Amino acid sequence: MFIEPNLNGGRSGWIEVICGSMFSGKTEELIRRLKRVKIANQSVEIFKPSIDTRYHAEHIVSHNENTIASTPIDNSQKILLLAQGVDVIGIDEAQFFDDQLPDVCDKLAASGARVIVAGLDMDFRGRPFGQMPFLLARADYITKLHAICVKCGNMASYSYRKTGEEGQVVLGEKDLYEPRCRSCWEGG
Image (cartoon, rainbow, N blue to C red; front, side, top):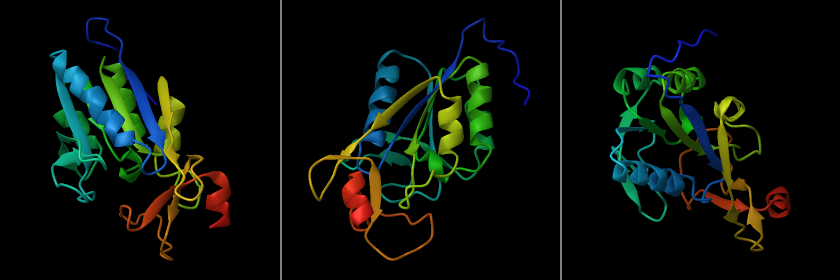
């Protein structure tokens, strides 16, 4: 893969990935980092997949209702068009994006941007989810967050689906998913 040279006055960009199970605080952490960037008067663009309308069509919203405006998109290539010359790019629910997202993040970082990506690292079956393993492999910084198991109170790394639906992508909240530790997840 060809990465365009850094033409941004020598400023080096990077990719940060925030991952974990559902209810681990990924979106909360993404919002926290992006709000700090805004306080520092850096230019910011924030994106989310257009299919994710659970809380709001045009905002990233954490489970505890912290929110920040974002642009819903259906194709990761649009990020390159909408984020030209921006200091920091935030991307939520990365597991729902197309297979071009890792290359898009690489191009943004090569151009000098700080790219902060949040998403589920595993699906409800415990398998790598979407483009997240490729983003994790390319990340300069990784933050893995954990929830609390609803069954036993231990650290939870898994998203347990409470319904029998088999598709990998089933959008839901506490009505469909709950965080579980390895033992309680395997015990179903």
